[in-house]
Length: 130
Image 1 (cartoon, rainbow, N blue to C red):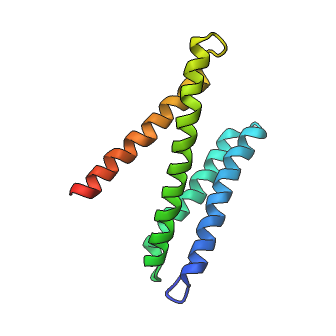
Image 2: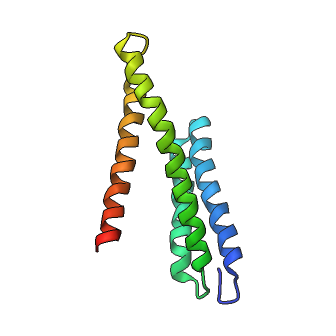
């Protein structure tokens, strides 16, 4: 358990470790054909990440962390935005010429990308105008 003497760096290391464990558990459970074991470990590890700030007396994040996360988020959205701007029109053109057909997986990726940017737009408007 983390206490008031734990540093923000310790919390970050624990958070990253538990998050990686959660992701590995899902992948491992799938590969080993034990999906419910993977889901159980995932839920415990990720649940711990969410509970840790509630039960800890120490400081978890500071303003620098907010700036770093903001810059990383912006870089991620920008990268995927530019990739989407290049890939999706190309796929539409290939589809129109018969060289590509939209299957369930590619359609799901396209609609997920739309959902991510629509959600970002709504969140941006909310934060900006509240």
